[in-house]
Image (spheres, one colour):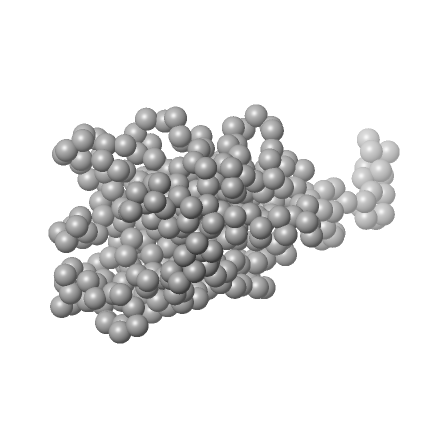
Length: 353
């Protein structure tokens, strides 16, 4: 017994440390906010329908109800621990983002905004919100989109953000809202293919500089996981969890064969127009920053849904259905993933990993 105690003392005096494991979690979310317009008229944007005197009679009362609804979703998505990073689409300007972050229940959580005005003909942009206590931004830029076959068209930018966690892990984030299918799939696929090619070029450039770059491509791509723009042009392969990894892996593909599951409902059919695509380093168990359970999720809380009287089941409780005001949330459901940061730490305080 004396020898055992002596050995323990020697271990303590010689500062031989026993390692501990520290963990941190980060939540990354994407949400198409569906026409989050500023009620004030902007003569440079096609926003007349979303003004008090426009077709939708979009008032500040309706706007305030909308941002409080959206805040409720954001606050509840991660077990009431709001996401650290939020990519958003369909926002008119920085004013609506400031109102969302600072005039709702989100104001307690220290969100900051990355936003650039795009030349989109409807006047809607993408943006990134982040909790500055946990995330720092080292670089950001708007990536312009010019279609070679339609060079005068005005299109939404892609947002690129280089973010750092509090442990100085780098994340390369792309926030997207590709061309709508409103004019039909065949008439618009070339435009989404062009968006995909631009993202692919950026991805290849990042991986050429650093093969272990942590990349997250999120957004409303207006295509499904098996469509040409995603599979063939972007080359984001379905991730099935069988250990086989590609340069880019689409975490939303697993929902493709699930009945009545998706982020958007068109008629009676649910599908995933919103994607969360990641580089293989985030799925590699040897990396210190990993995606929890190697999957992304769709958030569908009961308070966000209403009965679908025409097709059965439920549907998104959206803000408008045509010109009819419903006072809901969005026509899309948000998606999210969780990142786990593992650090081996010695009792003496020196990092081992």
